[in-house]
Each structure stands twice: as C-alpha cells, then as structure tokens.
Length: 266
Length: 138
Image (tube, each protein chain N blue to C red):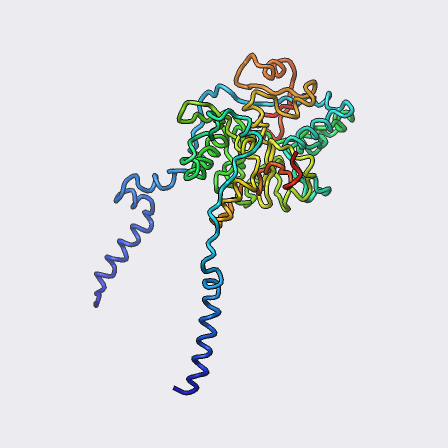
C-alpha cells in the first residue's frame, strides 16, 4: 500500500490525539470501563462496618509489668498456648509476645532528657491489630485479613511465605518460619488443642481468637490480669475504655496512621 | 534389516523392563482399605448415636469439601459452630472435634489416603493425636 503525504499526516495526527489524550480518549470511546478495571477489587475497597459492635483492644500497664516475673509469665503463657518454637537465636526468633525497651518500642518519640525509670521499663510488644493494617494491604493472597471485630488474623493455609507483610508491618510483629517449628518444640509440651505452623509461613499474635471464640481472655491477660486488660473498645463502658478514660496512654508509631489497638500506660 | 536378531533381543529386553511394574503386580490388587472406627471415644457413644457430624456416605465422599468449607467458616468468617442436617451443633475444630473421636489417624485417615495415593497437608501444622504403638494398649 502506498501512502501519500496527506494520508500520513492524518494518521499521525489521530495517533497523537489518542496518545496524548490517554485516559480521556478511552473515556470517550468506552465510558466507565477503565475505572472499573482499576478499582474493582483491592484492599482499599474492602468493606469496613461503620460502627462495629465489638472492637477488641488491649491495655498494658507497663509499671505493673516491671514487677518481677510478670513479663516472663505472660510470654510463657502465650508461647505454650500457641506452640511457639524457641530456636535460641534472634535471627530465627518467632515473635508473638516479646519484651523490648522504651527506646525501641517508641522509636522516634524519645525525649532528650528522659526519665531513667521509664527508659528501663519492660515494654510488652505484640501485634497491634491495627484499624488500618498495612500487612493486610500488601498480602497478595489475602492470607492475612482484618476481622470485623478488629483482630488481624492469619490464614496459614493461604500464606505463601512472600514476607511482604513483614516488610509492611512497622512494629516487627511478624516472623517467618525459616525452619520447621516442630524441630524446636518439645513433643511432650505441645498444646494439643492448637496447631503448630509449618516451614515457610509468616506468623504473628492472633489476639487469641481461638480463646475469644470460647469466651476466654487471651492467654497473656489470663496470666497477668493485674498488668494487662483486654476488652471491647467500641463499648464506652467496657473495662478498657474505663481505664483509658482515667489514665493517659500511648500507642506505638501513631504518626503512621495504622491506628493500633494496643495501649500502653506508663 | 541388518543385525535383526540384536535389535529384536534389545526390543524384547526393553519391553520387558518397561512393563515390569505391570506383570510384577499382576493379580495382586491392593486390598480395599477399611478405616477403623473403634476408638475409645467412639465406643463410649451409645450404639444409636454412633455417627459422625453427617452420615457415613456423605462423609466418605465429601469430607474433603466439608473440611475445606468448615475451615473457611471458622477461620475467615469467625463462625466456629457447625449445625448439621439434623440440627445438632458442633464446635468446628479439626484437632479438638474431629480428632477427639477419630484419635486413630494411622488406622483411619492414613488407611484410605495411602490407598488413594493422596497426601493432604493437614498434619504439617495440625498436631495428630498421640497414638499408642500396637500391643501397648490395656
């Protein structure tokens, strides 16, 4: 096919128009189609009930945690309930509930001349079960998801071990199973009512959903009820809301907008 | 054809080796598995009530779909109660409900799974009940 100069300029002009027009040109020919493809599904559109009836949250009295044995008791209760392995090194550590100091727990919030006492308090760290969990947004298989009651849960059947969630979580609450956890667990000390995990999945604190389903308190709260309180943040008369009304509290890395549901009283 | 007998002998040996698995196992069909349901927990039940969450035929053919469905219902929807066809309620839990009765994984689950050559990954995470080795029972 031969093409004269006039024909060539016509085609080039039309191409430029569509090229520069981009989305606008699309919109002209097939209105609405492009938008649907872009926003059809994804974490952003995940429905969130306007006013949930239950929103689980935890209050940690750090002062009371500093009493001897309290922190260890909580961690032990959590670990034995959920069959959490101890590989004996921090690289392979599986963290559900662990202890850290003020500097690391509230990184970026240190005052220049801080109270020595607060600096040395033991802070119990766990998954914050955020209102806007970044781990859920990045999970490609929806293995981690936010339940309507606020618990950020894991479905280990779906986890492919990509560790995006570990990169997304600003609290370091997620751990990867580099090895079969059963290698580091004592068979005789299994909690037969709860599974272990397998090699190659990410795990974290589950706010004891399996215990909540049976109307029991989370294992750590049961171990140290004087230091930890657990309850419904959506109910203004609940135990946690009453505590929070009386005492000033802190939450971790609020500036990131994740809206954590674990409150620290200092 | 050059070296006809060499080729024919070679072919015969090849065919013999190739079909080895067939004539080695000819006439030796694996016995149909019979999963055992004689665990102490099941024996404790009255004869009339001795049944699984659904009827035997349904469980035999559809337990995999049911398990998948119940898994999603319990874990993702947070609803850990199963109401069966007869209206009876059960707590959904592989380790705490299913395996409480079927505490003999080796003689129950594995029997058919080995026969069918399937290896479900349940036990990578879920802890199978502790089974006494044969002969140590009271």
